[in-house]
Each structure stands twice: as structure tokens, then as C-alpha cells.
Length: 246
Image (tube, rainbow, N blue to C red; front, side, top):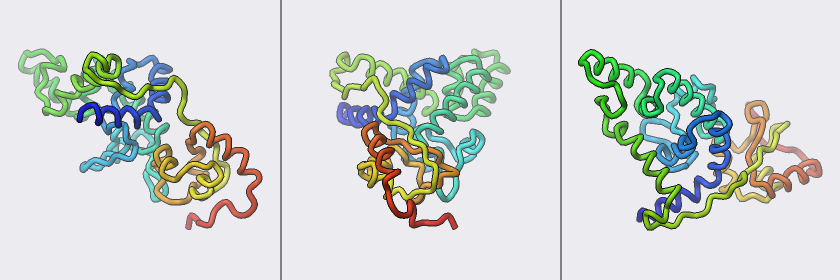
């Protein structure tokens, strides 16, 4: 059961992990932050919690808006692989500057910065330690950092736990392809040769079958499909879309 679940999570995460690791390292952040979507959503960019948190980084609506993740009838950027990763790392960086400690920053990401600030203040008043392990927190938040450490250990040394995980490729799974004019999703999948389900896995932010160029300047496609789309689009005769934005 454990091996099967981890295998599915790793297989799903392999589509996105290279990009996330690259962005984490570009910012000089701890590499294990790239594994946080395993805890948040099992690396499912289409995940939606009962509390309305969405995407692989599980942004609540208000927090998503604060970090410029647009949510409208055409798209929900909380599910956008590139935009949500940038927003999550911006948020984690802000929390680290606020608390000066990665464990507290992660607790705040899970529980909310106000709750962590109040827990720290309560411990200070009582003369107790303000370290992550000493705070009075919900069980989910108390287990948050240990879960991340456990995932890190398993991903780095699966054999130590009697597990075999799918290999993680050291190259991008997808390319970002510019979108200059409104175009139907169906036409993108046709010209690129990418099945609709796979297109949705890389572009789950789409709420409609129309890609509005003004709000979606790019789509993600696997390398070969991206090349096929770029070659086929100039040769396409006829309208790019049968839908309108009004």
C-alpha cells in the first residue's frame, strides 16, 4: 500500500519536480521545500480541499489573491504549475523573513502566520521556549515538519525503507509555449498531438475550453508536443477558436 501510494505520488510529481527544484535552487532556498507539494496535495495540481484550498501548493482563495493568483471564470491560477510555485516560494520566503526559522515558517504556511505569532507570544508570556517543537499547535501542524523530513528521507534513500520509486529525470518534462491569440483547448491538443487528459495535467488552471491569450500568455506542453504545436500552428487554416469571451 505504502509503496503503491508513494510510487503514484512520485510518478505524478516527476512532471513538475524538476521545475520546482530548479526554482527553489535559483532562489537559494532549502532544497527540501521542493518536496512540500507531496505533503500538501500528493503533487496533484488539481487538488481541492474541503476548506477550498486549491492546487499542488494548496492556496486558500484569499491568500492566492494576495499573491496575485487570479481566480475567475476562465482560470484559477492556484492550480497553475508555474504561477502557484512562484507564489508559494514567495510566501515561504516572506514567512522565513518574518520568523527567522524554517520550521516556524513551515508551521505558518500550514496553520497561518497569525496563529503562529499568537502561539509564540503565549510561550513568551509563560517564559517557555518559542521553538517549533515547544509551541501549542494542532496535530496537523505539529506533524508537518516531521512529515516533510520523512518524505525527504524516503526520496533520497528509498532502499533503506524497502521501497523502489520511479526514477526522477534530470531534465524538464515540459516547455512553456507562448499563446499570442485566443485559442480553443481542443485545437491545442489536436495540433500538439497531446491527449486532453495529459494537457489538463500540465494546465489544470483552465476553467473553460477556451484559452484567453490576455490572461494565459503560455501553456505547458511536453517537449515533443511543444515542437509539434509550434510547427503546426502557422499552417492551420481556419479560426483558432469557436468560443467567445462574452
